Length: 208
Image (cartoon, rainbow, N blue to C red; front, side, top):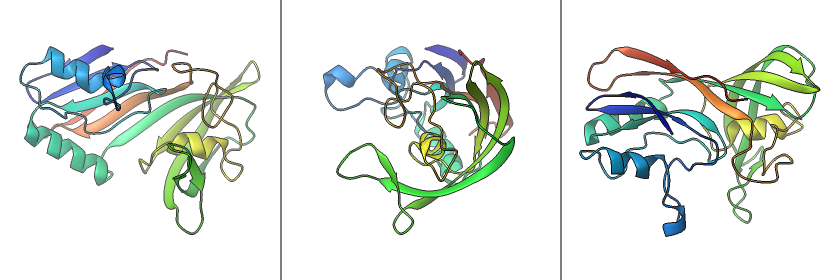
C-alpha cells in the first residue's frame, strides 16, 4: 500500500488488488487499508474510510483522519460531488467506442455479496465508458461512474444489458480464479479538501 498524500486531516493511498478497504469479520480479515492507517497514524479515528474499493480493485482511496474530515468526505461521496475514473481490461473485444450504461441492480440476499439485475427493486447505477484500445483480444476501457453502487462497474461490464463482457479475472462476475488478480483500477479521484476547501485531484499509474 502506497501513501500518495498525507496531512493532519486526510490521507490518500494507492490500494493494491487483494487488500480489503475496511476490516472484514474475524481477526483473519483485519488487515485492510483502514487498519493499516489506524496503526501508522496515531491520531487517526477508529473508522477513517470515507468510501471503499472492492478487495480485488486496485487504486486510489481517500480516508478522513479526524471525525470532521471523515464526515465531510463521506457527504461528498454520498452527494456525488466527487469525480472517479477507472481503467479496466475486459475479457473480450468490445464493439462501439463510448456510451452510458444505466442499469438497476441490487444485492442477491441469498448469495452475498453478489449483485443481480432487478428492474423492479434494483437501484439505478449510471456509468459512462470509453474504449481505449484492443490489446491481444482484450479491451482496455475507461469508466467514469456517476453513482457509486456496490460492484457497479463489475455488473455493468458483465451483464448482457450492460457491456456483456466481464472484467478480466473478476472472480464473481467473470472467470477469475483467485483474489488479487482482477483488472480494475481506480486511476483518478477528485474531491474537495475537508478543511482547506481546495479542489484536489490524485492519480496513480495503472498496474496492468
